[in-house]
Amino acid sequence: MRTSHADGSVTRASWSLLASAMLLVALYVPEAEASGTVLSTVLVRHANTLTITVPSGSVTLGSAHPSGTISASLGTLSVVDSRNGIPPWTAAVTATDFTTRSGASTYTIAKSNVSYWSGPITAQSGTGSRVPGEPSANDKVPLAVQRTAFSGRKTAAVTQSTSWAPTLVITVPVSAVAGTYTGVISHSAA
Image (tube, rainbow, N blue to C red; front, side, top):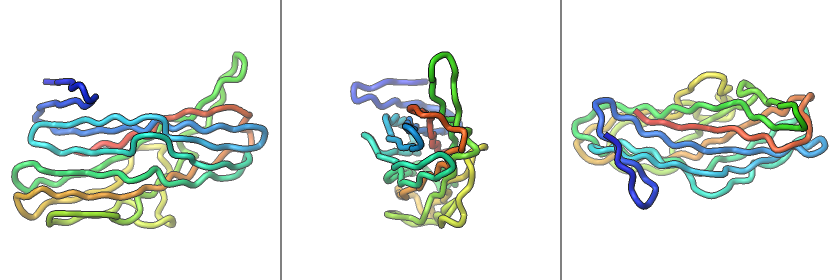
């Protein structure tokens, strides 16, 4: 069952609880440079809730020449678990390729060139365990496949919240052409 609300949120009741949020990320590659912003946010809510939220608004990712890198925080993400019992949760992250059009051709920065590291907990409430998927920059992983951003488990029947500020690292290929490259970074919690 899916219910849309005036504030843009969506409520779903399901046996398999899944909350997801997406960041649409664009990066512009002018002559020998790359930069980007976070363009939009989607919030999904559930009955007996496990929710994930991502920042709204824009985030500048910076700039880099072809064969350079862009490293920037995506802002603070939060998982709130107010489900009954003490079930575990996992927040996952995925990416799409970043593409731009130039004339009739499409150019791509592959998602394998987009790396992610969750970093440590930035805020928390409630009891239980919380484990970052990639606690430091040395642990960054390419988003060629789905990755675990964070995981946790409540130890009491109280609400648990966990926040972190992940970093996205994009390696701009030497073959990148000037243009605005757009891709999607998705987070989900189950």
